[in-house]
Length: 302
Image 1: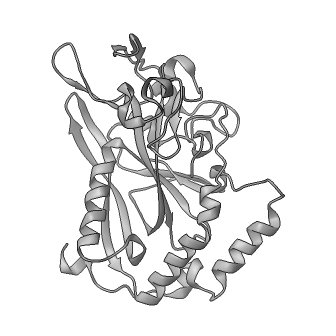
Image 2 (image 1 turned 135 degrees about the vertical axis):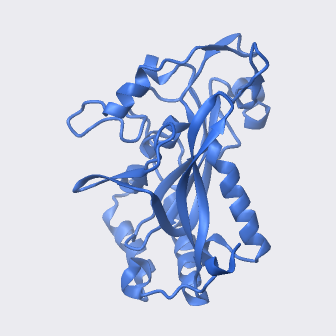
C-alpha cells in the first residue's frame, strides 16, 4: 500500500457520531434493549442498505427520507461481516420475488431443497460448483455466494449494510489479507468501497466493488470501533430476516410498483442450465440482483 494512503487520520469527534460521546456504545445498546419488545429483534430492514448497480454501473445508490441518492464511493469502518448463500431454482423473471429455494445463513450449512443431497454442507453441493457449458465455457455456480459487510459511516449510530456479490469477494479478501500482513484489523482503518468495471468472459462490464484503505485510525478510536462491534454482536447475530415478497432491495417502490431497473432485469430471462444433480434447473438470480437484495428477505442473515 502506498505511503500516502497510510497516514494517521485526524478524526474530528463531531464528524463521527459513534465516538462523539464516551458512553455512546452503552447508550445505543441500552436504548435498543428498552425499545424492543420481549421476543422482538433488530431487523435487517432497520439498517441503511447501500445498493450496488447492475451491469457496469458506476454509482452506488441509497434510499433516504429525501429520496434516492447516488454516489461513487462510500467510506467507513468495517466492524462485522457475514457470509451467505442463496439458490433460486427459477429466474426472477419467472417468479417475481420468491423466497430462495435453498439458503445458508453462514455460507457453510445449507437449508432447503438441496440440503439432503449434500448433508447440508454447502461445499459438497452441486449448486455451489462451477460447471462447463456446451461450448466449454465455465458457468458460475447457481447458488450465489455473497458477503454482508457491516460498516460505520461518519453519521452512523447503527451500521450500514453493503452486500458484496461473488465477483467482489476476491478483491475484499485480498484487501483483508494485506491489512493482516501489516498487523492491522478492519476496525483500525477507514475503508473506501468504490466501483470498477470488469469483464468476466461473456459477461462484459460487470460492476465489481473494490476496497481501498484511505486512512489509519488512532489506537483510541480503533478501540472504540472494535468495542462497538463486540458489544453489538448480539444484535447483529439476532437480525431477523423474515422472507417476504420483496426479494430485491429497491425492487418495489413506495407506491407498490416495480422499480424501472427491475422491470428491465425481468425482461432478460435466463436460459435453462443442465446440472447434475438435479437433472435440469434454471438460472437463478444474477450476482447483480443478489447485491441489490433486500436484506430483510434473506433467511438467517446475521
